Length: 105
Image (cartoon, rainbow, N blue to C red; front, side, top):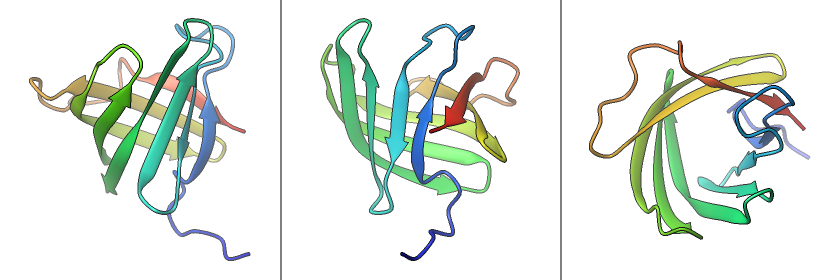
């Protein structure tokens, strides 16, 4: 199997100690994503684009109807992902100071 060039591809999960421990998200090679937070029964999905340290999500499905475009910043170090997102009405965060940690699964 060919390994993707994009290091964000795969499944990432918030570890214990994070605000939504157990929340996971999965980025697929075809530009789609899915997230699940089973503690609250929340699921969402849509499409994404990454460019340098920016990520753009278009959330087209959400169990609580939180739909729309989200812009953010991210950083990947080995098996950890720092991700900070803002909704359509806000600008992308300027840094990762409020980012959430996800670990590669």
